[in-house]
Image (cartoon, rainbow, N blue to C red):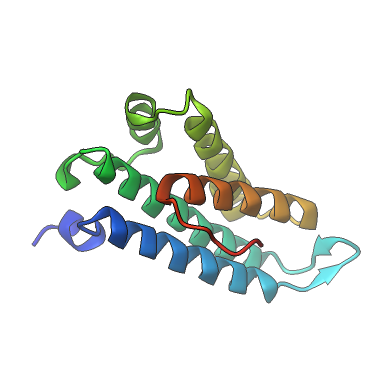
Length: 144
């Protein structure tokens, strides 16, 4: 069994469920972060929540691509390849790709790697992730 087989859920429905679970877990983690004067005082739970939310986004993208007919072994893993695949398979004139870019930069780069501290930034990137996941999976998620 290869690494790819153990990490990629086989159906769009399984990916949508995984995305919803990750998103809910990320929201719960972010709620544990202490706030003082509209800033997170501890960056560790912020980073953890952002990393988990980004995994939710990746699961939603993976499920969407599977739904569009991409075989599980051909679903790309890198950011650039995912952008290209979304370009080819998205019917929304780039809206999905732009949401994906915003989620990537907000959650993965600014949140996970840099550890933003502004509460408004957290609300904004989590809203972007929620919108993208809902658009790709067709499921309604709880607002952050």
